[in-house]
Amino acid sequence: MRPSFRSIASAALLAALSLPLRAADIQVACVGNSITAGYGLAWHEDYPTKLDSILGTGYAVTNYGNSGKTMVRGSSDTYWSQTQFANALAAKPDIVVIELGTNDSKTYIWPTYGKDFKADYRAMVDTFRTSSPKPEVWITLQPRANKPSWNMYDSTIAKEINPLIRAVALEAAAPLIDLRAGFAGHPEWYLDDSVHPNAVGAIELAKLVAGMLTRSPVAIKRETSGTLTVSQGCGFQWYRNGVLLPGDTAQTLKSTLSGSYKVSVKVDAATESRLVSSEATMSVGVSERSPSTIALRVGSSGRLEIQAPADAGPVSVLLRDSHGKTVSVGSVRSGVYLYELSARDVQQKGRLVVP
Image (cartoon, rainbow, N blue to C red; front, top):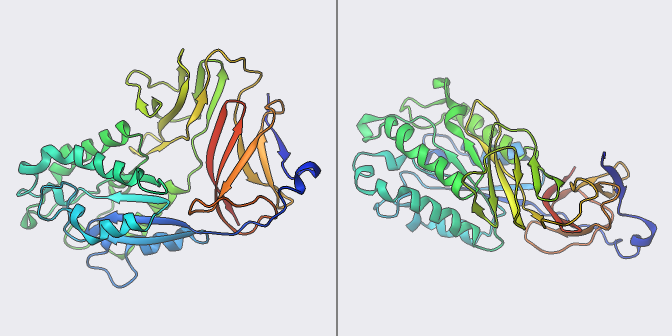
């Protein structure tokens, strides 16, 4: 059955949903090393500043980069002990982008502390995720970096560090941005040190991050009771109640267990970049009258509309600003909002950008 668009601003709801929305920016925290901080670049040439410009209205990006810092906690140069890390947590961002790992490759760090890299990386993801208001945490594969005079060798990044970051992305169901593939074949994007992006490279890095942050979300459809499927991708990993399901790596999942399901999707064959869906609740054994896919959009009238199957039944809407405060639904103004939709036993979360 094809979904139909039904306006929620009907006469029966207008009285209750008439208050105007208040716009609020989505706060993006860029956590990282000198690649994030903007080493060797002029003022405002760093990638977070460019990311802020590319994302435009509705977003506010802050640079929490610190040059020379590592992910591993045992290092004297660890990012964990820096004020930038404390400030990023205190800022209560909505989105966190972690770009760390290049400095961990140094020959006086990796042989001693490399064994802790994966656990420390996962711990940072979990630390941000358990902070309020529970931001989306994105992680990045490190681009090529080779500087023997700095005790930094790309072979360690390629063969050891990036594979561990990929493993964290899969195990933690974290969306992944493949900066390595994005920078491959572009030596002209680097400074002469072959480690840091130049001004052009910082713009290209920002484009890579923005392209993933604004990509259409992964949608889960329930075809029948016990069967979930996801939009097309090049690789899949399913989770139930936040726990990875090792054998469930197909586009369609069949399960006899009720629970909250989500899926990590490799977006294309050329990169390792991945998106992660919102959770979809499935009650196995519940009769399904139609596939359950619901979403929120701004209609041509300027009011919010629900995209849902015609027989989905009542759909409730919870709308919040970027700081978690509930706002009323009514005349839509420019801004970015976070929403939760519920219909029967189906839930859908998302971000709505109103131009």
